[in-house]
Length: 289
Image 1 (cartoon, one colour):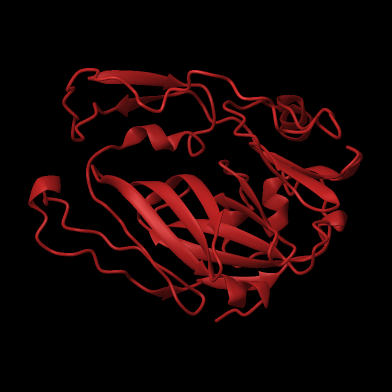
Image 2 (cartoon, rainbow, N blue to C red; image 1 turned 60 degrees about the vertical axis):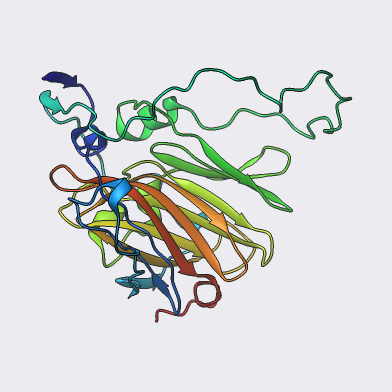
């Protein structure tokens, strides 16, 4: 049995508690997202039932104030006392090594560099910004950012900022929880980490997201800008993942949906991959349904 001494916030690094095996697969329609899971006892090689998508609406919706008017921090945070956590050993399937047989994709030559030189180079957010706002630093920083026609938006654990294309800071650094201040799901107001920025180049919109960590019910908190200006107001949504903690979320853009993938940790020994699809057209229109 292994133990781990944790020196940071309990809920921010709670992901290390759980491992096991279930799989959640999802797909969506009509402001919906999805999660389907096989029986926890099912073996990967003996699955007999196909995965069935589950459809659910957003559990909360509203419109934020303009980001340019947000305070730097919604409320102060403090360190919890040190605790000892059990880290269970991995019990997932193991791939047997078949030895090295060569790699046909290895390049013999290096082609000429085709990428252009950077247009601008400037200092982004750092752990010092966390210290200035919260009084402590966190690791890992999980830096995440996207570039649009006129802006660069960056999020790290636990703050975000908006820049113009020359590196001038227009907003921030701001506590990520401030983006959901006053939201119907209080857990979204906690700067929990693993933030994501996605620029929707098809509609000139910005998507900002973070998960929640308090439990026992978990959420993906998703904000979509009303216009192409990332310093303006956002449509705010919360999508529940039930009792499964949606760790390490990644977002992708499709014609009719925003796709989320997560590493899902259940309340006891369950572990699997979650795939969610959020109906993009309705989110862009600010449709709560």
